[in-house]
Structure formats: C-alpha cells, structure tokens
Length: 245
Image (cartoon, rainbow, N blue to C red):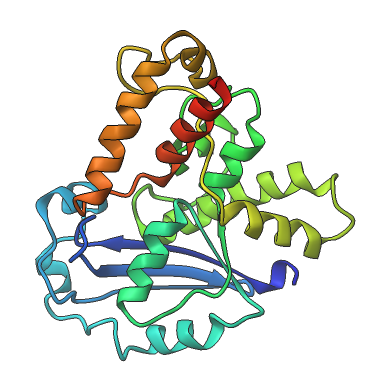
C-alpha cells in the first residue's frame, strides 16, 4: 500500500441518527475529485441543513445514491488494496454501509490526531479546527461542503503522515500503522465537559475516581438502551479506573 491507494472521502447526510442517509458524497482518488448530490430516502433534517446548507429542494430532482455511477465506482475501488481516509471515519463508514458499500481498510484522521497529540495541547480535533490550528493553506475549501471538506482532509492527513513518517521506513508501514490506530478507541486526554472541563482525565482519576465511575455507568446505560455507543469515553474511563486501582 502507498498513497496511491488512498480514497479521501466526506459525506453530508440527512442527520446523525440510525435512520439517516447520504445526501452528498465527495471523494478524491488518484488525483481525481468526484462530487454529487443525491435524493435520500428520508427528508433532510433542519439541523443537518443548518450545517451543510443542503435543502430538500436542492435534492428533490436528484437520483438516489444506490445504483448511481458514483455508488458503482466506490464499490469498485473499495477493495482490499485501497483505504478510505475520513475524519471521524466511523460515521462515514456506517453511512456507506447503509448504501451497500463496505470499507475494507480505514484511516481516521480524528483518531490519528488524538494519537499524535501526546500532551493534549490541541483544544479541539474537529476537521475545520485542525485546518486553522495547523495553519494549513487551502484554496476552494468551503466548510461543511463535502468536496471542501475532502480538500481539507487531504491536507490534514498529509501533515499527520509527515509527523509519523520518521518512525517508519516507507509509506506502506506508515499507512498500516494508521489503519491499526484507526481500529482502536481513542484514549481521551482532557475533559471537554462537566465540572472538570479542561483538566486531564488522568489527574481526575487520581483525585475523584468516583466521578469517572459515575460517568462510565451513564455511558454504559446509554449504550445498553440502544443509544450512542461512545466507545472512546467508555474505553478511557475503564482504562483510568483500572490504572487507579
């Protein structure tokens, strides 16, 4: 595997729930960009419109994604040799799966950024924040437009790749390590919420392990009731609670 095997992808959707579907897909593969709007099987939610600025009127005369030329092309290139690169990749991969596309290999730049930020100096890890935090110069990259996000994604990936490249002998090894890291939950470093907002989780675990235990119970209840499976925080709380014992 090398960089020619990478598919930089972003999708806009009708929402974030289990029933939501794709309404825009963009990707870049072998130097060529692809982008299209699609009519989803359910309406786009207002909350989603406020982020992507894609309305139901804009897609009412578009073809469905399933059966489209783009769908067939993605099915063809999502092979054992190629790698989907996305930010918060689990979301995009799950959306593709609803449309019948299975991603064989995945790199999640969100997880890679977390992994490389050993001291937790980056306040936020969303794609557009990283764009400006890393001072990346990118032309024609409108935020929350799928193609614009793909262009930012590629630049963020390249910066992360270069940071890792010194540890490995070739592109193949770097990509394999990125795939490995992307398959694991994130060990969160700081609280972005609650009464300990901004503090390191490791420090809170020593001072107030009961708080972590309570949060873990709440996360597990939500997961077991069919709600959000917040694997990163569940893993983090379990890790630090085990370390505290």
